[in-house]
Image (cartoon, rainbow, N blue to C red; front, side, top):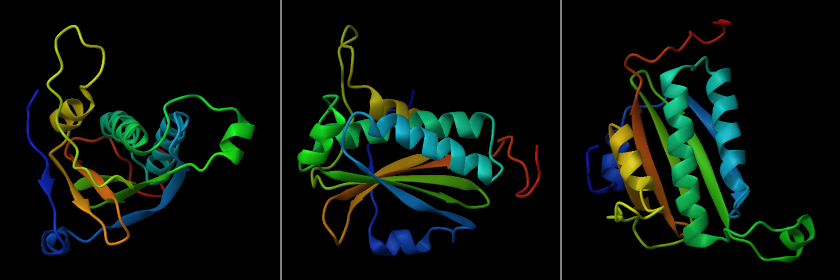
Length: 172
């Protein structure tokens, strides 16, 4: 697995990125443990509607799970809360968005934490701490950037080459 440090992307770099063919509206969630399966389901549904299946969709689900888990750990609660507790607790929000271009799928997860993400160096017997290593290994590139509204966006680019996507509108 490649171990790459994130790149901070400024407005100038972001402006040079390829224009999106398809932009999926962002999903905003409370930063709680149940946000992870919700974000994964959102990703699966959106990619299917865009005709993306197979390895790219599977990889996107894994990456979204890891990035959302990190966002929840950074800004929310990892405890499972009852419905009443969710309604009566001031929870942080996170947001997931997808951008599909002719060559790549960009996944972006926003959270309110200003601290940059860090690649972990977990011990071999340590249970966690490998999420960003996994993201780095599965993605073409990844990074983060602070946002004007506060917090940061952690993003990654997945290569569409070799994906088993169907043209939009086909039933594949």
